[in-house]
Image (cartoon, rainbow, N blue to C red):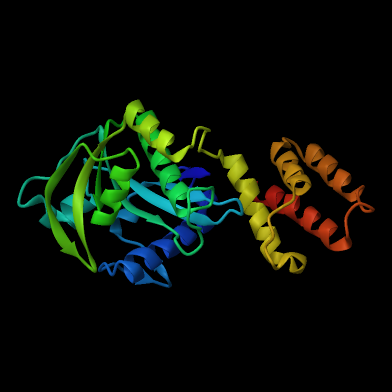
Length: 284
């Protein structure tokens, strides 16, 4: 599922951003060999301080498995200030209806092969769908993106081929880099969805994301769940009920229901259930 983190809600998802910056360090610093700044295992550059929007893919356990950054082209951005060699001396494209998409990355170590959910292919397509739909809904008409030839082939195979390119292909670390143009149209999104077989809404709202992240944190802190098993359907139900609770009284009702099921769960499971909604209540 996809969440969007920007200047308005980034204080709620600081741990997600840290995990994303760590993924970027592994992909762009280690795997691709780009000349990027990595500190404390995180890849962060000057453009991350300009309040960009991040479109981030999470797996069923709340782990960051894919991410991309969206930045306005009317101010500083990577193609104009870092990858200017691509432009062959031409002025960078600037428009209020064009965003730059950079730092597109997918966790190939955590994800599986194939096209099913939690695969590299699925996460890649889901992230592309999410970024295009988010941009379109924000009034953006075009995206310019700095990619390598491998990503260029991925776009073409996914019914999402660029409609044009800017400048030339230049060496960048272990690979080459080029700038491609994508329109944010219903036709492009529909073609991508058809290829991926993804027809449902890909976005997760903030409450759902916070509940998932709280469950992840509780599972990591609970010795009874050190193997990080996914939540059962009943456990997910309690997390959803806690997420839907609007008042402290409603939260207490959910807790009482969990406590009433002592005979149904083992002591370890009961503790995990109690800790998960309390963690969410604390985060909320």
